[in-house]
Every structure is written in structure tokens, then in C-alpha cells.
Length: 231
Image (cartoon, rainbow, N blue to C red; front, side, top):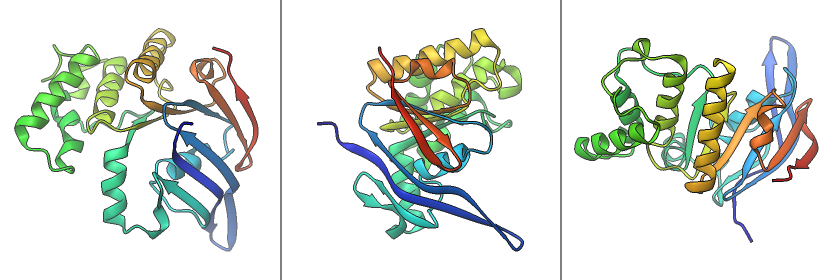
């Protein structure tokens, strides 16, 4: 039986906008097991971004419980949460979120600083990761000197910097052309199959969800349908 890595139980997230309360999540239940590739789909306003923040332990729920490897995140301090999140979860964003003044190498090295790795080990691992995403010849290039697809591959390498168990990809192909997007999806599949990474991908594009083993459909802040893909 596969172990649970992240579990959301009856999770609510309420935002106050003046005198109005908006429930972005309304009792979300979701379990992510080790080694799964899960796609979360839903239209704009369905709560996908809020769900990502919860799954990635970037925020705490208004109500409900989130367990990360048996730790109730609401009982952790922010520094404890940042440490466990930094070790366990890697993030790939639609906007890449690379630091423009840093080279590809420096961007990939950055998360390792917060985990206490020395410079020699950080550099060695960052070079290996950039070679893994076929950018070994671009390590000293800054983001503005890279194409969109290359920037996203740097972002993937950075997400893997601390060898996380879970990689969360939030609309990872949203800013890419279809061919480059396909390449990014192929790489996520390779991470899942060959590196045994747990992948959680958030998308509104049904064509992208084909790579996942399981699809969770989100609407009005709850899962309304689950579908197991035939592989």
C-alpha cells in the first residue's frame, strides 16, 4: 500500500474582502500518495490556485486539516514549515519566477542555501540538474538570455534542487508554445517514471491532463469528480 504524502481533510479557505467573505475552498478532501501523478483541473475561479497553496503548504486553512508526511501543518511554526516544505516539495510556476539578475546556475543553487548545503555541493548539484534538463551549456546565462522553454527547464531544475519527493507544477506550460509545452510535459513524465517523483499538476487544459494517472475535477472549491486515466 502506498503511503500518503499530503492529505487535505475538509479544508476550507475563506478570504475577507471588505465586509464580504469569499469561500475559495469549501470542504476540500484530497489525498496524494507516494509516486502518483495527479492532475487537478477546473475552470477559472474553481479554487485551483488556493488548492495549490494548500497542497504545497504555502498557506494554512481557515478550517480543516492538512497533513504533510504525518505532520499537521497548522501545528508547525512558520520556520518549521518552511524547512519541511523546502525539503519535501518543489514548485514549478507558470511565470517561471526566476531571479533575473542571477544566472541559471545561481537560480538553481538558491533553494539549497536555505537547506544549509555548502557552496561546493550546491554548485555540483546545480550543474548536474541543469545537465539533466539539457542546459549544461547555458549555466552562466541569465533568464533574459534564454528562451521561454529554457527558462521553464531552469525552473524545473530549481524545483529539483533539494531532491523533493513531491513536485507541484502550476500551469507549467501556460506561457509556452505547444511544441515546447509538450517537451515540458514529457520531462515531467520522465521525472515521474524514472525518478519516481510524485507529481501534482494544476491545469485548465484537458489535453495536458492525459499524462496524469488520476484527474481530480475542482468546482466551487470542492472535488466534484475523480477519474483514473487508463495508461
